[in-house]
Amino acid sequence: MENAFLDFIKTGKVLVADGATGTNLQQRGLPRGLSGENWVLDKPEEIIRLERDFIDAGAGLILTCTFNASPLRLEGGDLAGYALEINRRAVELGRQAIAGRPVLLGGSIGPAGKLLRPYGPLSEEEAVQNFAEQAQALADAGVDLLVIETQFDLNEAKAALIGARQVTHLPMVCSFSFDRGTRTMMGVKPSQVAAELKELDVDMVGINCGRSLAENLAALKELRLSTDLPIWFKPNAGLPEVDAQGNAHYTTTPEQMGELAPEWIAAGAKVVGGCCGTSPDHLRRIATAAKR
Figure 1 (tube, helix red, strand yellow):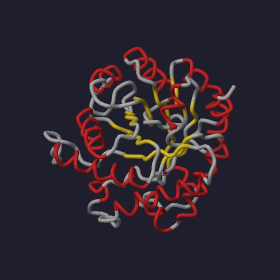
Figure 2 (cartoon, rainbow, N blue to C red; figure 1 turned 90 degrees about the vertical axis):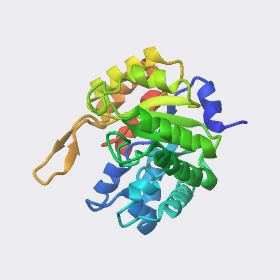
Figure 3 (cartoon, rainbow, N blue to C red; figure 1 turned 180 degrees about the horizontal axis):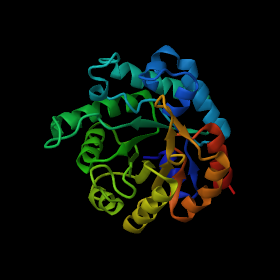
Figure 4 (cartoon, rainbow, N blue to C red; figure 1 turned 45 degrees about the horizontal axis):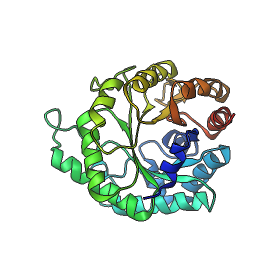
């Protein structure tokens, strides 16, 4: 079956994805303690504005504001029970932001918010069901691909991929956060990601979030040596500095991100963008470098 995302990747060209959702919305007034999903329902114009800013900066792919929108992740909070509505609405907002332009829409799926047994209370069956429900909502609403991102546990990532594959044939990206340098918080190495996921029906593997730009690049190089799949790469805008009020400030400049982007592409990244701290200005520099 034809798919615009897979067709583009086959060309060998580099696709520019968007920047950060959460940190940018916070800069634009999202109160601490609320997630972007609150604004999907309460301030949809702000979601559209940020997504359009990324498109104007050069993004050819944007993600829905649904990182936290699985049923389990919303459980116990003020948005409990609203998973289906949030996922559907977020896709609608993404389509409004794109407004006929040649931009792809990826459905963002983050971790469940609970650890799998034996480290936490979540069973594999519960995890698979959780991810299947969110994937179904995003697929039915009309995304072009699914992006299972900021993963740190191989078993949870597998559950997400299995659950999603039960309900849709859309292309799948699975991206890990190496927030211990070149290891995830569960000790997973990029080479392990490549080895464990190669038997699953995943179209692209990758790296997002993490720690410093240098460490993310090292993880990218290890992943490239370990897999033949195309690679997704959305690093943080460096490590943040936290002020006395607990607010994170990212000091890596747009110019610095733009200067580094050619290294990411040379190391094998086929989709490039940014995670936490990556503003539309940062993304504009990344896009300029990627399109040279």
